[in-house]
Length: 321
Ligand SMILES: Nc1ncnc2c1ncn2[C@@H]1O[C@H](COP(=O)(O)OP(=O)(O)OP(=O)(O)O)[C@@H](O)[C@H]1O
Ligand SMILES: [Mg+2]
Image (cartoon, rainbow, N blue to C red):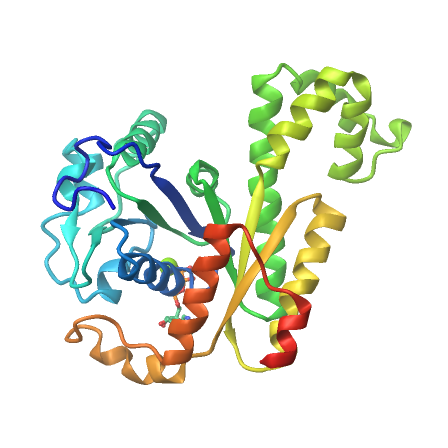
């Protein structure tokens, strides 16, 4: 565990800070709920955790933690050039600190490319065991870049057809953005463009075919793409699950991801629809920490363990649900 009162002062003990980003399609799938639960879970294990609200259009991490004062928020990073480490506040959960989100819409001039890169640099320089990012819903390029910044990319979806469609859009956008940066980095843009522009001539139908075709160009390209893309691994959490049939959706999503998008997805677990939490929502402002059921706590524990250890749900495990 790192020095408790020393956020942003450099990582003295040589331990690695891990960034986890939680995103997904738009539409209230529970990204904020899940990231708050994961942050609490990691902190309760004795890790120092910083949760940053990077939902620039609809910040609400502060609400989940009953934080009323908005003296410190990420707005000050953009509009007053404040250092990110100075915007960290303690939460009521031991070991868990928070950078609250925007208090008002940012002016376009304060949120530009240079500021975004600076924010990412500041995030990487914070001192903690885990830095968790709550992303806005949808696929805008800034959200995608924050997602790709993470060591662990986590997508939250609910078992409903429209939400699952949105999830695929989200995964494709993240993957395409990653590919674009790899193509740019290794001078493959033109070749990829040529193949994609003449895809019927080259027998290319999907992005998986395009990558296969590019890999055939040379051993070097094959090595680059295999290495870079092996790092693109996604963790899927199914939220608001109401029955055993619904939680099986996670396995179907995993199959679709690999077959049609070419992305390796880990189904790291599910969280039931928590009626206790729903009933207690109005208490958030006064409760020392948000109130969830025991089953939600244990589901989140399992999910965190899976993400940390690179493990996932097994079909066999459903027999015991
Ligand atoms: N497992 C759950 N059980 C009960 N209620 C939940 C659960 N997950 C989320 N909720 C509730 O659903 C609503 C939407 O959740 P949340 O705000 O986390 O979604 P989001 O994906 O972050 O939305 P946005 O895209 O607007 O940021 C909230 O009222 C939240 O408390
Ligand atoms: Mg949210």
